[in-house]
Image (cartoon, rainbow, N blue to C red):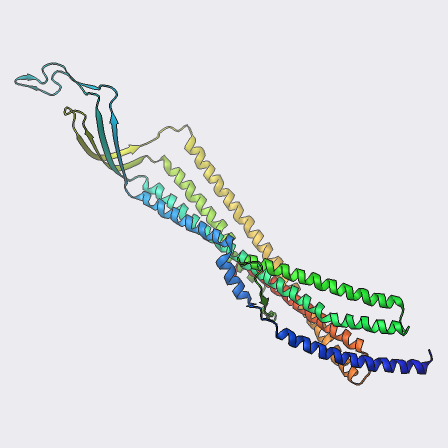
Length: 460
């Protein structure tokens, strides 16, 4: 082709491309208007997602019920400090004929002689009989052991509260991660959909240019392949978005098919913390570390309560017995009051070994505290480094986005003066859309890292 003809041909192609770009702008505007007329989908904010998850999450409900169970157990055991009452009654049929023998003079010796004057045997006929006993005993020496046991149970209740708080933090963190995953998936889908018109226009121009034999067949095939890749990527992005949305619905405890759309992510904060201050916060606020320390206290109370078993059980008691339909020779009612003692002087070393086992458990709890502290510090350091890394990555994507935006402005200016081709404009628009998407993804990654850091220091 001669140079003059080539210039003429490209001038015609450039004007056609200009008309194509104008039609593409009109078509895109109409598409956006049509989207605006689609039925609105409910907007789900991060705060709403967290609120619903906290109210409906199964794991958090289970942890809350465990705290309630431990509280009820403590309340029940507190009643052991008070007097123990017991009533026993029976009704039976005598199968034998029991007898009672009163020895001579067993009832006394008087001026008239011994009573009875001779041995007297009284038989009780086979007949229905009944009896009842009632007793009340107030523990005395065991109050110290009960006090230690109640202390251990109270510490156990606080441990379950810390476990509930840990579960709550985990649920909130998973909700944040899932929410930002939806935002990231939506951003990737928007970027691909924004670049699709560019690849469609590239293919159309490639077909025209191939018909004029200004490009090779491989160029046409390459444009077609790139368009197919983009469409496949859009389908994959839609699947990923649907999966992320279903996971978020599941964490919130509602129907996984519930439609929603997320809101834009706030800009990254400028809050810069030192790892030392974060470690100090974590050591004071982490619920799992608090629980580990509480378990040391609980083990100590358990050991002291076990040692208190050496003290004899002394209680103040009142007992009453009555019978019916036995024999008039026996008293029908007996009542007595006094001290009761129960003691096991020889246990062949059982209590000593049980006490030693309790102290070993206390040592294990102390070792667990050290291990938990190191794990907390390691998690805080890792989360802090990840946050700083995402902050730097966000600065890079922000610079890339500004560059792409400036490039688009320059290409638009050149296009208005017919100094750039339509494909250059589409390419610049696609680059800006991709840069915007990467910036949103980097922003989502930043807030995910921020959520991990909050969880690491024990903040909601």
